[in-house]
Amino acid sequence: DLASLQMRAEDKGDHYLVTGNKLWTSDAINGDWMFCLVRTDFTGKKHAGISVILFDRTEPAVEISPIKLINGDSVFYETSIVDLKVPKTNLVGEENAGWTIAKFLLTHERVMISGLGGGLSVPARTLSEIAKEYIGEEDGRVADEVIRDDIAQQEMDDQAFALTAKRYREMTEVGASVGAASSMLKHVGTKVAKNKQELLLAIEGNQALGWEGEGFSEQELAQARTWLRSKGYSIEGGTSEVMLNIIATRVLGLPKN
Image (tube, rainbow, N blue to C red; front, side):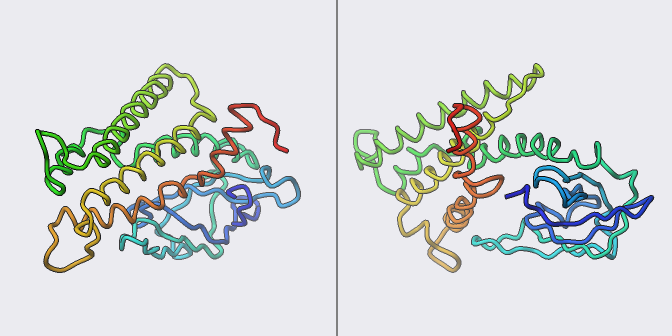
């Protein structure tokens, strides 16, 4: 619930004094500057009173700690801030109007996340080629008819989603807003990507479950980690449940109750 953030930015005249924690900062170690949503007013509704500020990530008052993911990677960091002085000139937009900016950023983030898993790119090898290697082939086709059917469904889903994403991408290129439709892209795109990882697991079998050691190729070891990483696709940038609520109320116009 992003609107419930508690990182404080107290007005000190010509600067803000910022204190709080920010979880899930992507690639924080690689950035010199960060933008952050902070609460500048605690008296109104939770969506109000939020502002966006920029600050120097290398300041001593800023500490970042890696968050280890289930696949062993640490691409996200927790940012802890204690009494950081931020000049008011670093305020982005108007004070207490940061939620509008946050929604705009979330729209682009969700569209980006929807493309995880390679659904919008050309793979190095097709699912059929991988299946033939692990399962075998008969008359030029994947030997297992159930896997063959699953591959056909996955490829149709990939293509349908790619065309839909292309349509919305072209809309943004001419200045149109994707808006709440980004939630549809995020929900469907991450679902398609996770299904693909489950299918690859079914195709490669035990060879896709290796973590280290002999008996597994580099590709197979990478596949195990990619499958584990895919579990987070439907969480980051807003859970699938949140996306479905947005689709129901803001796209379909259904009542909230």
